[in-house]
Image 1 (cartoon, rainbow, N blue to C red):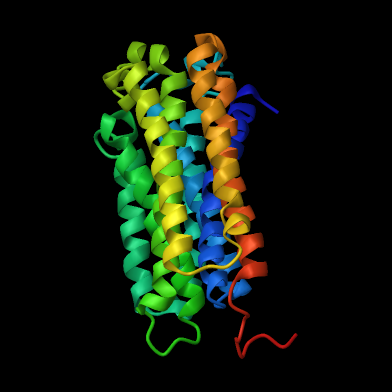
Image 2: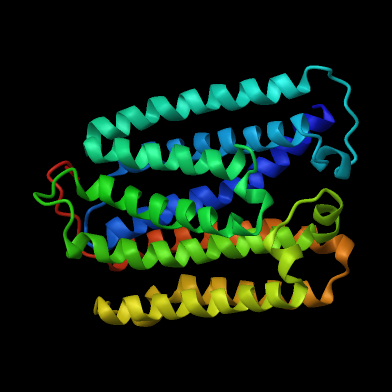
Length: 312
């Protein structure tokens, strides 16, 4: 494996945990009220994986074509003169796969899925490409919240509930997804802040104006901790407002993830700068833990599945 391929693989594995965790969170929201449908949920998972890969490849293509410095900072020396072209073609190829799955999801969910798909593509373009990608500005946390929060979680939940619901937009099915989308969106912002916090020095050298290097370390750590407190509060309010039984069990994923965030916040203060990147995979893994654990627990404690598509 070449150094470039190894770098892209490690970067993708870390960030993909965010998308996978968000899809599991959408499945958890659907499962909570007995709307789980595993075929559309699996397609949502594949769509998110391919869209993230497309975004990662295209962002690296932008970085290389504009000589922004990511590969240089990672001590990668080019041995392949067409590496820039390869990154672009990889992005287009994976995007084509995501589009094919998106059309299948639209056939299952209806015309509104096309609109959501267009929003995701346009927002991803402005996030990773365009004249100035939002990921290179302090506003990068906005698309991060939207893509991994409401757009991913609510859409995944609605596609499952829409298969049999007479009225797709009803508060009974939509409310859990709204709460959980806010939780996952804030956790995604924390992962974004953590990455920017770990690359403040190199970002300044490469003229990347992230939230962390524009706001400073102390403010970034404060926002990181506040986000943890807010998503924990939202989770508690969701359990109380939805009258969920077994409160301690349903809040277990949130408690675990908040403890992990406190640990990360403390390490952000204590660790030397050259080791801060070791925390980034833990920040993205935290989203996967939240989504997966919530899905497992809500599968046990949520409303029984009354789907006519389920035979056993």
